Length: 596
Ligand SMILES: Cc1cc2nc3c(=O)[nH]c(=O)nc-3n(C[C@H](O)[C@H](O)[C@H](O)COP(=O)(O)OP(=O)(O)OC[C@H]3O[C@@H](n4cnc5c(N)ncnc54)[C@H](O)[C@@H]3O)c2cc1C
Image (cartoon, rainbow, N blue to C red; front, top):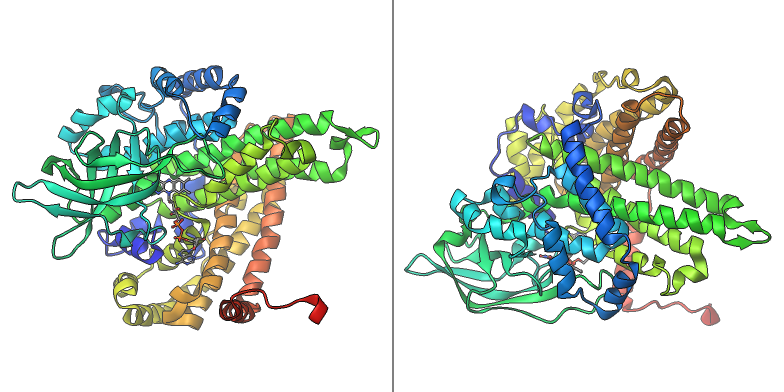
């Protein structure tokens, strides 16, 4: 995904800025505001929906819990057998988010994310086969399809007769997804001729329904989205890739060689394909986030058992402080990731007009938390964790993809910061236009933004409405004050950065990353506080420990945010850039101790 183009595309149809923009609670943080009403009370699920979710979760448990040996074998073999895919079909797991009228289960985003969580507790590859189908493979049809297209495809997608894949990435186009070269040329008949190659497509080998992005040969040459069946002549897939992790999940190239795609299979409007791709990815992020949370819960269960059973120096290793510290850190990470993923899933379900920044935050936080958790779980198991007999090394390998696909952590941090910077209910029309201009005319765009920054600094000084202390339990008052204080600090620093860098902010990636990190800590922390505030204050140990988690997260976040904000002004960024430039020139590490 190209961060600049993606930002631009996502906002291009919704200018000028309105009060709705400001309702994005994550973006508001960059203006120094906490939109308490968007985050409190912590979202709940009504009893009826909880019951049906329980049924699905229980059937996933029954189906996957005892298959560890299978998962291990399929990981070694690099593929899932057809019987397993068939069993997923029979369980209805391909129809999770498809409305009941089309034969699916019709789960909400939140419930779906919870089901993927359950799948990932047992195996990431199994979760991914289901997730790539629903979160991205056929999500475009759900979000943008016509009634005719839905009637034609959704029943078969719900039953799993059709399995879906999302085809965006190409050999020359990864993060810069807007640069794809797969072409779609319109024929006199109105049909399209599709040519090109997509790579690393999840479910590529098992899918028979592809959402494909291609550049149309209209004068604007814009990207459009197409619904493509495997049985269209000219569609083929390559061999399964040999990968580090998620080895049982099918990842292949998909080729389109003069594929005739009927006019009726254009998805959404011609030329809006990039926006469609980004909307699909945004909407699907809580699937991946839920998967990460499930992986963490699985790791915690394994690690707790290992810590209690493994004895060294005459004691369970769980008695040692450094092992306790790891277990506690896993729980804090998991609780925080679960809170933010759940919050974002409900924002999506509630029809919130703009959740892209929140979704990106949930993806970055949950995926990185899962990577930390998998690393520490393996470390606790140590030598045993390194061996293939136990699942740690597979979980460790599987987790590594999470920060890479569906938007790398780097790209998403840039996206979070840039979309936050442009936000504000106080944005004036010219500033909004300036943001659009950043992609087409950066100099003009940032000139206007710099003017705006000066005006806004005055506004920010008078902000005093962030009173979330009243919304949290007494024990968390100090923690709430941390988030109030650092939200104002983020707002101020956003202004300082805009004033300091003006039009060149877009190239100041060190600064953007720091702003994003503060926003991530703030948003995730607020979700944690909101969740704990909504828990039954029943003096149980579980509640007491939840309070403790919120406290630990807040205090650790405070230290991170403080460090990050200080580093905005005092840092070694120029030295780092110079060192990288030197190494690019030297082509290798040039020092050696024996030459001192
Ligand atoms: C197992 C697997 C499954 C996948 N499944 C799918 C799928 O189903 N469908 C699909 O379409 N794609 C899929 N992908 C592709 C995946 O989405 C891309 O790998 C991802 O978007 C990153 O692209 P890239 O690998 O080409 O990295 P690049 O874009 O080449 O990036 C390389 C590095 O540079 C960084 N970088 C790039 N641009 C910038 C920038 N402007 N500023 C700072 N840093 C930058 C990146 O963060 C990364 O660290 C899959 C990939 C894998 C490995």
